Image (cartoon, rainbow, N blue to C red; front, side):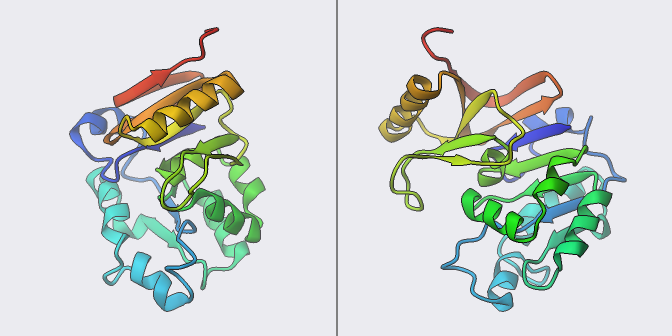
Length: 225
């Protein structure tokens, strides 16, 4: 499996496209699992469409347009609707997909909705390309941390999909004291590398045993390493 962990919405940007063209192909089928929304923002189908709907959804173009840059037709891109798609339909779409994309938002709520649709095993058996932006990046880690922000006021560890196990990820890194304190805590408590992806300028590509840092990714290691 290939993992693309993004800290930029437009992954067709110049510093990524040459590398990602080796993986993202015009014939690919893409499934976007739009399950990461805030409960305060979405209460019904109408709210969901306001964020993700094809006709003017706030995030639709940002999620879909970069795939078009790689030659994938819009007809090959399917955004999963939590309100209208059934778990069995979604599981079948995932089995047919070449790329699964996890949007940004709330990673813990995204995983809860994945489990509500009983999709965990389907995702764990997926052998294509897993892409994710922000929350959709950390979700791919067996365990991730979140430094305090407006959505998560306290530092905490969370369980993600048990796939990537060798590092932690600090997304939207701006070098703030809060972020640096969180990184140091992870280094002390978990004794693993922390990759800090700088906002809008970075991505991590993992292809089997090979990890490539693309753009501006800072690397923090425990003192023992």
